[in-house]
Structure formats: structure tokens, C-alpha cells
Length: 429
Ligand code: GLU
Image 1 (spheres, protein in one colour):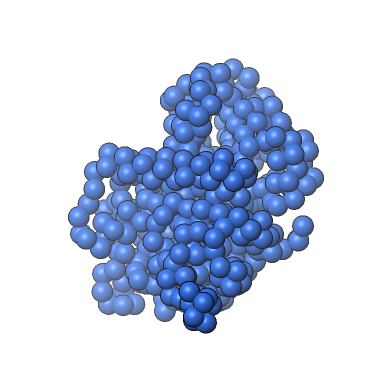
Image 2 (image 1 turned 30 degrees about the horizontal axis):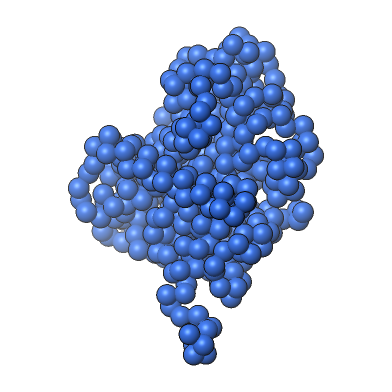
């Protein structure tokens, strides 16, 4: 395995392209990003000093439409990570059939150390630096780790001021009064929930007998836990960046969400509370949470959580990847050998970008949808995509990740081939 997260991400292509109809010359293009932008992001701090942060926006490929993907504010943001995240976005959009290519952005910063005003200045300064690289028909950002609706609102406002034109469709995941979509907030968790409902049907599960652990209690993790709990699933393990908790009989998820909510310090913007500080249960580490003996493990935090080191210790029967890239390629092989099924990130966490697409459609048409309509369309898209991948998996005897990549490659390949292939130009067909 390569130490480089992007190299590791593209290594999955080699396995999948053997099973796909895509032209080999197209694969070569997918191994390189279309455009990489590195920027400096100057911010005047509250104490009067000036700090300069490093930022990126990377467009992986745009064969299927404008590029799409979130913006992350995190101290570990670096070029390779953003590249891998942009690459995954391309495949995510293709597997669920929305007309976008992949992109991602990020700023290397610890947002929890900033005041609200500093955070707003950072968001606006970053947009000022990438403004020529993004646009409603070019590249459309969205929230990701440690960015939220309010940050998207500031960014949309800054872009609109630069263009001197109100442009809500330049960014998705905005607050509802600023052109956001109903149902966008919980869309990532809800999309994963719809995938699990498809598995429930396939395996004739009784939710009351199914135990679940969730690593990461941010936007995606909280919502998937809430929806599963409401259906009777037993959520026995929960963790956030500060640590985890375990309760054999299962947690009352709404009260944990409420407690996490109450312990927030910068309420409207960032949650600083930690679940392990607020609940009386057995305290466990993030590592211990990953190794719990449960039916479903839902990593919903960051990439590279399950590697060759801890993969042999994983006892979950199914892993649903709500985070991007939580399992690296070496761990993949070990988990598969142990018979652990993985619902891959590019399918399991696609709900967020699907509803981003609906938001973009609403912004462009000026017509806004009811929440029920968003849920229904998301359910249809997620269920259809899940079944398409499952059919591919069964037909070609693949694992779910490879099957999802094959479906995505076929879709991307069709777009590339529509512009002509080597066979076409050399008159062989
Ligand atoms: N950041 C989310 C993701 O990784 C959402 C991207 C979007 O909505 O464009 O899928």
C-alpha cells in the first residue's frame, strides 16, 4: 500500500477497470486531476495580527458535467487529501447518476480555535482566492468536515459580491432562507439510512436484533443514528473526536443528540461538546469503538480509520462507510478475507451530494420543493443506485466496492466515448 492517500485511492481503479467496459485510455485520464489550485488565505485576526492559511480547490474531472464537492476546514488538509476527496466525488456522482464530475476544497486550519468573526473572514477570504475557479456551471462547492450551512451562506454572499450578481447556485448546503434546500441538512445520514433499509430487505433483518456502532457524531453520524434508532435498531456504541461510549442495551439516541447540542460552546457554528463528557456509560476509545462486536459499524468521521494494523481486529459483520475513505485499500483485502461486507463511501454517503443537486436545480429554476418531495426523490435515487450496484456485484461476483466502481466507470466511460474513442478515430468502428 502507498503512504499517499491519493495513490491508495486510485489503486482501486485497477481492480475495477478490468470488469468495466470503459476504454483503457479513459482510465489514464481519471488517474490525474484536471486542475489543481493552491491558494494563500490571509485573515485579519481579532487581536489585529494577520495570519495566512493554505487552501486548495481541486477539480478531478468534468466529463459528466460541472464539478462538485465540499470544502473542508481541518488542520490536516493537504494537497493529497483534497485530491483523493475530489477523486471520490467523481465516482460518487457517477454511481448515483447525477450530472457532475468531482471536486473538493479545503483550508488547513483548526476552525475550533477561531472566533466567529475570524471564521467568517476566513470563509470570505478563501472564496476571494478561488472565485475564478468556481461557478454555477463550472464548479459548485458544498459543506464538508467542519464547515456548515452558515459558512456556505457567507461564501455565496462573497461570490455574489465579487460577481455583482446574486448567485445562489454557486454553492449548495446553504441556510434555507438564503436558497438552501429543505432536507439537505440530514441528507448524507439519510442516504446511508436508505442503503441500510435496502440491506434490511435483502437480508430480512429484524431491526431490534441488529446492533450498530457509529464512529463520529457530526452531521452525518448523528442523523444516521437517529433514523436507525427510530426504526428500532440498537445503537450500542457512539464516539466523537474526544472519545466514545458503549452501552450493551443500546442508547436513547435523541437524548444523546440533545446532550451534545447542549454542551456546544459556539452554538450556531461549531459543536465543541464531546459525547463522552455528557453521558453515563462505559467510556471507550475510538479504536475500541471500531473493534466492537456489532452487526453494523458506521465510520462517519475521517479517512484512514481502518488500516492493515487494526483491520484484523474488526468484528463488525457489515461496514457502512459514511465518511469518505475510512478504510484503506490494504484493510479492504483483510476485511474481505474475513467475510466482512463493506457498503462503500461512494454509494453510502452519496445522499449529501444528491440533495445538493436538488438544491442547485431549485436555485436555477426558482421553484422550491417540499421536504417530503426531497425525501422521496432521495429515497428513490439511493435505493435504485444500491440495487444497481448489488446487481453488478451478483452478476460479476465482485465485492460491493468494486461493483460500485464498475457502475461508476461504465457511466463515466459512456460520457468520454460519446466524444470519440481511439477505435472511432482510426475508423475501426
Ligand atoms: N462533502 C459532501 C461529500 O463528501 C457533499 C458534497 C456536495 O454536496 O457537493 O459528499
